[in-house]
Image 1: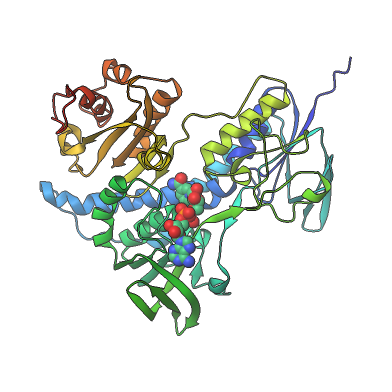
Image 2: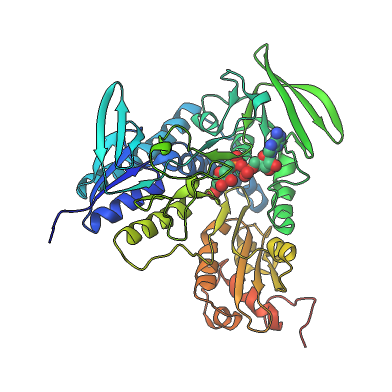
Length: 472
Ligand code: NAD
């Protein structure tokens, strides 16, 4: 019997890749983790989730200070030291990614820096500044993530036109900023630059911000964010973009607009696409679908049974926590454990102010799929805790299966909604019923009570709110 450890190569050290690598090492595999960056962390830690949340925290402090006036606490206009803010954010990234590197070394994971490419179905060749390392493997996990989409007409060589990475660098605070795309990235970065004092215009191709997200959630966000924007242009596209003087000129075309406008800077945030080009996949048998995602089965296995794919490259939603969980599944499958990728609820959080978070079945999905559901909506105006924070702009809603009263989904809009949605994930995953949420004592006074009380709305037994619709 051979006692040789199985060799696993993980290509891409973002949250999916490093989670897979570290679990595999803990479970006794011989692991090599490959990435171009000096440490693990990927887009999320270096130029995504983490730096954006640091800047959104600063924005939150600025906004909260401005609102203290309402209860008699008045601050002077904030003085923003951009260099210090940037250094603070960069320090967080360094600390986190350095810590991830240390965790890998402690687990004896080999870290190979460079760009990896499959040369055959058992080898990845890694190039770093002209130096070649060959990594041979029994199994591989591809976790190379995604890259921003920059549509052809908007593709110009200019440091005045940013993608999300450039926007997060915080090189400057433009007087006027055009944000192209009213999705996750567009709205999070618009929130940051509005708080810093830029005049921000958002252009969105569809008729709504955050297309696809429940309209009642988006409305609460819009009511607070849109008045702070210089302008919001819905049903509008940017046809072209060119440098002009110190800034840029764009051609806008939309339902009510057909004109050129000048801005200091523009951020393009119109989506991301899988980073599947030039990986040498033609040598492996791994198949891509028509959108460039790697095709995987319910265990994250590609068309080559020794190669797995996880995270953004393996399909939507492109979210770090989904990648991490897929990474765990892939490793368990490789080790012969009975694992399958079959989540009942993947949470999503838009870190705007207020935040929007949801998991499981959404109201919009139920409607478009013709699924019969009951929906309860608990307004935060009826939450004592929300009142004490001066933040009653929010609500908590449950999507419930009629008859069984099983919780199929939860959605929350409000300050800190992202911290609350995990209870919904647990409820959906555990097959909890309305009664379970009602019978679980929630601490008072907290915003989490709105989850319990939205369950009570089904029977109109909430102490603090009387639903208009009665169920007799
Ligand atoms: P997105 O898909 O969320 O939003 C893109 C928006 O741009 C859409 O509203 C779309 O209608 C609009 N659009 C497309 N073409 C346009 C055009 N020519 N002119 C104007 N508007 C146009 O994409 P994103 O914001 O770039 O984010 C990419 C992905 O990154 C997201 O899907 C998400 O998975 C991930 N992400 C997640 C978070 C988070 O979890 N908080 C944060 C940032 C990014």
